[in-house]
Amino acid sequence: MPVFYEKRQLVTPGDLLAENSYLAGENTFKEDDKIYATRVGLVNYENRNIYVMALKSFYIPMVGDTVIGKVVEVSLSGWIVDVKAPYLGMLRASDVLERSFRPQKDDLPSMFDVGDIIIAKVVASDRTRGPLLTIREPGLGKITRGQTTEVTPTKIPRLIGKKGSMVTMIKQEAGCRILIGQNGLVHISGRSPKDERLAIMAIRKVEQEAHTSGLTDRVAEMIRKEKNEKKEVGKKDVKEES
Amino acid sequence: MSKKKVKKLIDEKGIRHDGRKLNELRPIKIEVGALDNADGSAYIEQGKNKILAAVYGPKEVHPKHLALPDRMLLRCRYHMAPFSVQERKSPAPSRRDIELSKVIRDAFEPAVFTEFYPGTSVDIFIEVLQADGGTRCASITAASLALADAGIPLRDLVSACAAGKVDGRLVLDLNDVEDKEGEADLPLAYMSNLNAITLLQMDGMLTGKEFEQVIDLAMGGCKQIYQLQKEALKGKYVEVEEAIEEEAKEE
Image (tube, each protein chain N blue to C red):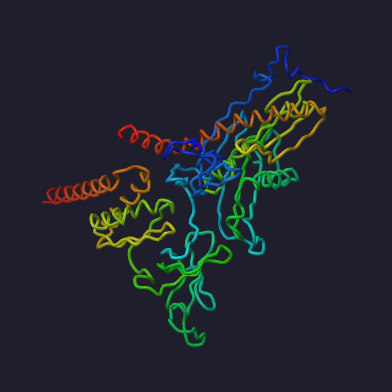
């Protein structure tokens, strides 16, 4: 059972990855006992499972995912939410009210209006209808402050790191609260816009160098350096003024 | 009044009027990710052809009634810029533009996993900036890279190339003059790894034997283009590749 590529080698769609008794994993397909890649990415195999880590992809909602989205429409009995996927998300009014929805009494725009950013969880998704969202869990709901930035969805696991090591480090170093949506939207809120900018810079670095190892340490170093530079610049300004 | 031939298109040594051999492609330059706004894009120069391809999606279908319940809707718009040819071309889609949009779309249907994302659409836009024969083939080559760049799962990259008969000789990758003056032109789109043809057209006259030879010739051209496509796609991620190689060395 031959394998035609080394681990972590760059492949393009249609590349023959392996033959015979391998299992076709993510971003691959099997035809006549041959496994081919379907996306540009890096090959990897674990035991008999062969898969491609895509370098660019789009988000497909999965049940249980936490996502960040923007309310695009207030409908008759709920909200329609853009979750950066090919399908629009649905959030039902009864889910927010925690009781059945009464159209005469309940005013939907006063709860969420068009343009609001919300963090929600996917409870149902089958690619035939838009994913159904819920905010009935602690930590979910409307986001009122901070800013959001976008990351390629395939790189979200790298941003989270092993057991959350990467994101925890960025949180500590930059002093920001960071919420990660599986759909590639990341929300950052800190004490000052400066801190938020620092966190976004770190996230950009993670996105660009997602494929390298020892990244956590390098990002931590970068944040510290940036912080010190800013302090020094601040000191200089004070001196010049005085 | 008989039409005067300016000069022979192929000389005695088998060299064509632009200096190519019979089975030689025009010089090809490909750039992946040429446009920032598109989800995926590619730019190709094949001889004097200059073509941009952009891909948007997958996204919800507009208008909604066009959505397909069992598969993704693949749409394609092939368009020639008014300044792409000697005589100004009307910017409105011509009969030819509409036909080419259709055949290009059909050339991609077998390559894209449309059944993965029902109820969504992917739009392919092809803009010919300068045309010199064989634009449908160059368009397919570029658009397939744009699809891959957009992260849309593909069975294989589609490469396309024409072959035909000029001055009684079988030649690869016809340009505008050869296409117009020659006896036959056969554009072919081909998935090299899967050995599958996704587009086959022909105009002019060929004998059965010649037809088979021309197909083989065109397939050979597609295989060369396929290698260039792969290089171009990997070219976008050179940094990634280098970083990984460096790490491998360190280990």
